[in-house]
Amino acid sequence: MAQMELLLFAFVVGLTVCGLTGSTMELISGRKVAFTEPYVSPSHVLRSLAATAGAGPFMLVNDALDARRQNRISTAALLSCGCTAIAWSLALGIVVLAIASWAVRLLGFPA
Image 1: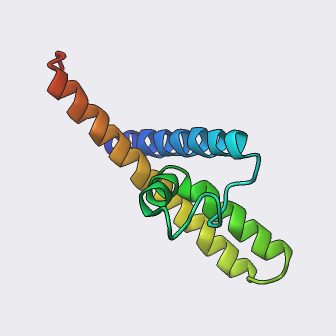
Image 2 (image 1 turned 135 degrees about the vertical axis):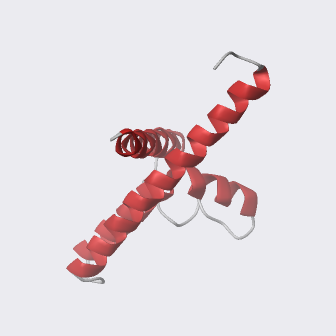
């Protein structure tokens, strides 16, 4: 049971980071986050990687929903994008928790 709780916590952390990052990017730019300019650009690769790492699941869901509304993808493809976004949020949460754990140990706080 402890493993399931840890995975659920990592997933929620990933969703939180994704939501905060995506919402902040939307507030700053005034545009919906997506895998397009100004968020993803071949001329700004590092910025694009950072934006995609932080708000990628949010971007994927936005793009998939837009494509579904325009009948460019099927319902099965939309569900596949949703499952990918869930897995991506879990992975993001695991990375964020690992970085936080590393930072706590580096700063010498008691466990």
